[in-house]
Length: 229
Image 1: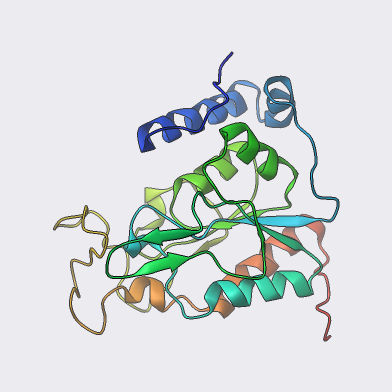
Image 2: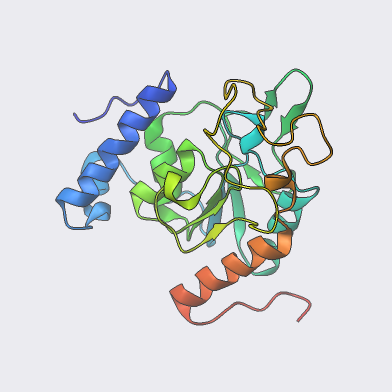
């Protein structure tokens, strides 16, 4: 077996297993689907078309901090006829000064589940929306289009996707410049000021919506009409 059907116990374990999926894709000239079917008992659990999202990350500064941003995304996807499946590892992430909750209005398949379940969820989704985090890498490895919402890092820090959402009109791409990146509130340029984390906070729902629309159009050439249109 290439896999143990267990949750990765560390971040290194997670990335190791993600790389294994990606190696399968490379060795099979992109035939990742047949490779995954050989390894996992792939089974569709949601009849309707759906999108996977993951809203948590390993540090607060990696989050999408736009007020109501995720709620607006979920409502928009539902208007287009999608179910929304949240595959975060936790319902709540506690950073001491603040607690981050997964959004309401979605199907919550949260919890530290076996990696095989996450691959199964991603295998049947139309696309994935997430942050600069491990689940975005896993979705990409499974061969899914990824809308990545990330302002703290530059595009060359992650895999290439035409659906990257970043606001370059504000401070952005500071990841790794200097300072203590183990601080979950890391912000080397504007720590302690009103501009702290503006790289994330100033990514608007409209920016994310534009990338979602672009993705759907590129996949089907037809953008589903929202209910009120």
